[in-house]
Length: 81
Image (spheres, rainbow, N blue to C red):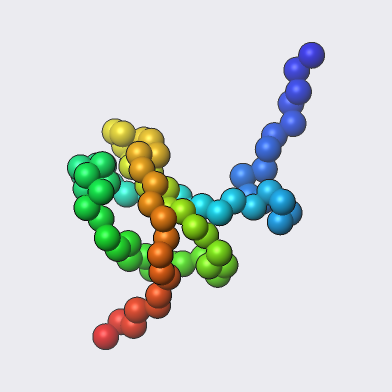
């Protein structure tokens, strides 16, 4: 028997919620991610909920894989100036 139900991509309840967030990077960042030399990530958009503990590094084509994980120590807002 085949089960055709799909798992939703987004959490549908607090119990489904993850403590991680995936951020995509261009493949040329592979060396920095693998070497552990990244110390900060700047994003235009930040999730409203700041309860994440982990940042997962997804490298785009041709790698197309999650290649690293880092603990989130702080989330800050930076002004344009």
